[in-house]
Length: 493
Image: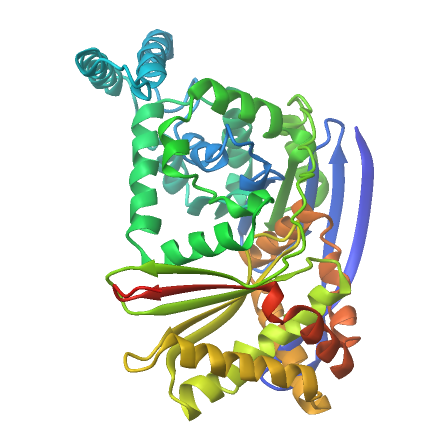
C-alpha cells in the first residue's frame, strides 16, 4: 500500500532565556508516501486530545505565468466555496446556472478591454450577470465548510498563499480527524468554484486595501518589482490590477487540476492519534486522488545586480524606508550566515540597529530586518525603517550603512555570536512546542524540499564563525547589490 515508510527521531533542546536545559524533547516524525505520490508527515503528541491538520501544495505565485498571475491567491478563496455536496441546496439546478454565469462573465471579459467596446452592450451583459448571480445566491449555503468545522470544535480554519506554496489548515478535536479527511478530500475531488466573479471583485478590493491604500504594502510591492527584473518573485502574489480583472474561471480550473494534486501535496498531522490507523484513514480518503503532474521548476534566473536601484513613492503618510540586498536561499551556507546577521542587526532591544538608530541617534521609531519574498529561490534581506518625523531618510540610510560596514571589519565576539545562535534556536523551539507550530514548520520545509532541514539546522548554525559573517557582509552588503525604496510625504525624490 505504501512505497515509503520512514521513522526518524530527532532531538531538540528546550531553551529557557539564556539557559539550555538538561532535559530533551524527542519528536518522532514519520514520513510516508502514498501510491499516488502524496507525502504524509505524522507526529504523535498525546498531551491534549487535539490535532493540527495541514495540507500544503508546492505551488504559489512564483509558479504562475504572465497569463496566470493571481491565480493561486484567487484559488485560495475559491476553495472555501464548497463542493458538489457542500455549499449547495441543489447542485443539479446550480450547475446549469453556474454555466450561464460563466458564459456571460466571459462575454464581458472578452469585450471590456477592446477600444471599440460598446458601453451599452457591456451594461446589458453586466445586468444579465447581476440577475443570474442574484438567482444563484438562492441556491448557495454560505461558509458551510467553516460552519461544520465550528460545530465539531474546529478552530483556526484558514489558508495562506505565498510565493512558493499554498497551505490549508485547521486545529480540531482528535476524534474529528476523519471528518477533516472526508471534507478535505471531497474539496480536492469535487471543488465547485461558485461565486467566481463576486470573489474576483472581493480580491480586487483586497488589493486596494492591502497595497494601494497601505504605505507598507505599496512599498513592499515596489521593492520587489525594483529588486527583481526577471524572476517571478517580482510579481505580487495577489496579482496586479489588470491580472485580477481578467482572471478566467477556465484558467483557474486548469491550474487547479494540474497542480493541486498528490504529487505536489504534503499532509502534516500533529497531535493525539495512533499513527498506523491514521495513515490507513488518510490513504482511504486521499489515496484515490489522481497523481497529477509535478509543478515545473522556475527556470527564470535573476541576473546579478550591477548597480544600486532606487524608487521613490509620494504618499500621504509618514516617511518610510526599505533597503534590500540579494542573497542566496537555503540550504546554501551563506543563508545560515544571514540568519545570524539578521538576528544581530534587528532582533530585540540589544540588537545593533535598534541600539544605534532608535536609542543612541534617535533617528527612527521602528526597525526590522527579514528575509523575503520566498525561500525556494534566491531571495532578499530586507531592512524596514520608520524615520522620526524630524529626521531625513538620507540620515537614516547613512546610519544603516555605517552599521553594515561594521559587520565587514569588526569580527563578532564569540559571546555575541553565541547569544545570537541561542536567540534563534529559542525562537524556533518556541514555535515547535505547539501542535500547530510544529505542523506549520514541518509542512513549510517539506514543501520547500525536506523537513530534515530542521534536524540539522542547529549544527549548521553552530558552524558559522565571525570570519564567515565578515566575508558574507563584504560579498553581499554593498551598493551594487542594493535596492532602496523611499516613501516621502508628498515630496519629490
